[in-house]
Image (cartoon, rainbow, N blue to C red; front, side, top):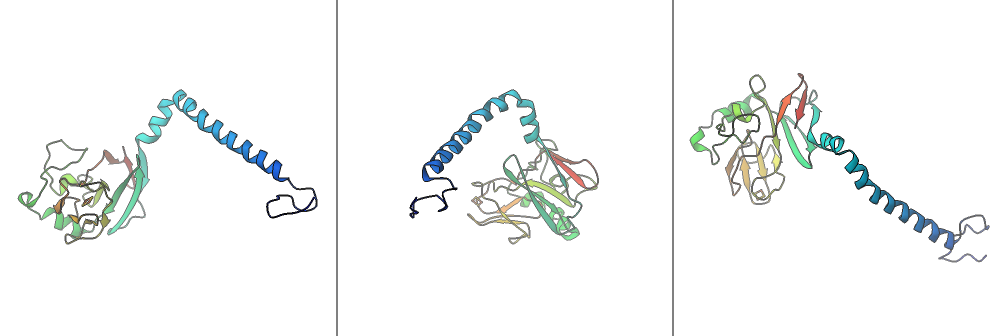
Length: 194
Ligand code: FES
């Protein structure tokens, strides 16, 4: 058989012909389609398993030293985990609540009307160095940059919102502090989120 630029034989007649190749391609497309159809049925058969998988994650933070951050994905969103330095904690705690644009803690682990104190924005007593937040700007949903902005916290480059070291909105168009999800330490070095 003649070998042309469009032929898929290997030249000695042992390889697949162009027609075989087309069949193979069609077969693969069929297989992919079958998987695509099958998945929703499997998913419906095991709703509890799929829901559980999304509900919570556990993150080992043993390597996150003071001054370091980690971003993980939870329910499709970035979660910022920062081990704040003593100075960052101090800076956050020194801010008078009257200076805050959003006075609420926005922390799912404390009362809904809790104030945005440094303590109630942290991971709790004894772990005030840790902050765990949904890393999404409360203006229009961009992901802010860490250790940036005039307050040393986060800066959203989309429209210039500035957050402090407790993730509280301090200037710019964002209306609220970054949200703190349900989260807790399940050991000295592991945080469960969700
Ligand atoms: Fe962050 Fe607009 S989305 S400032």
